[in-house]
Image (spheres, rainbow, N blue to C red):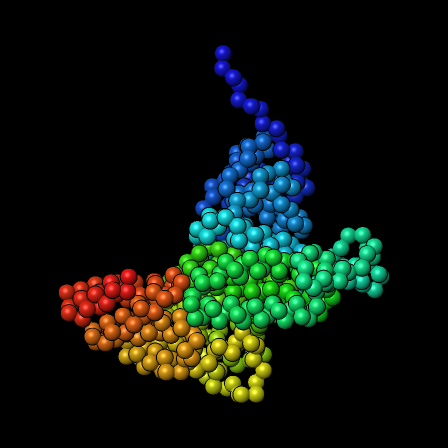
Length: 483
């Protein structure tokens, strides 16, 4: 006599929500499949699948989170997988959500920091999903600014925003020299500290690569920034706080991108975009979108890069400072360059050059946009011309960028040197190309940057047709000696 399989318990929570939403089983399945497509998933659910879920079968992988999102959109309130009687979403989906409220944004990004700072190695192996760019960029573009950001400060009625129980207790003063806990008051000095930390980690990233101090940055976000976000602050301070944390979160994504943790980087960028919206900083949100576009360019997704930059342009409008507008046009050009679209690439480069030329020394420029100067513009030109196989123009612009670029931007100089080496190779100048490539290989060996290594490897792949030439043999000997 064989044992019977365990009986599943019917999912009454899911049944009640299906009735409330007015879905048929087939209609729910269709919406889950459609949402999956937005996230790059090819799902094939039907009414029979929904019947199984109602009988107690648990859908696998990311599906519970997708089902919850379908109901969230339909019913206009945030629902989790657990609210539907389903298992929690898998980490492959976590972090791509564009939160409905500031509180939810803190929960999502805080969970991401904790997983990343722990032993969740699988988080750094998640793949980049081009389709996962669509929903966050759309929600940012059409979304409204959060009406209330302050937390724990008394409002006009004496109640404390964001804290249950009204005015039962006042904000907890900051205890200097002790660990910060939730509920403590956040002041200007705390935000200044966040900004200073960002400057420090940016300097390390530029000079030594994203892998040098990325983990320390994530731990700082977990142990310092998250308690601040869960602390007590008024409206003005709160928006400045969210702006500073958005900047650090974008930097966590940027350093993750630099170590080739592309899916993780994508999630940090999405959350930085949401935090920037809470800060009310439209221009910084556009900068995050441009950062996402740069990652898309690097991974060969030119069409997505162009779309992201155009959303950014639409989001900030014509009132943005010239340096910001020039940056957006330049990165759009990079997307066109990857696609081989010569006319569109050239037009975007011309707009970038013309717009930057309008900038004046007295203009107010956000701190994050000050890097976009003549050296950076020449770098963008060099990359575009290389991608379009216009090697003579690429050489001219790459050389100009290297002449103008400050030594502290070591990784950017390395990238530009490889562009120059590749372009020299394209012109048949093998000796010069190999000499430049060897310099870049030496610099890459001194950094913790997967992108730097990949730039050099791309150059070496281009050397393959000339592998028997003396210059190439010398190059390989020099690189082998680096170790």
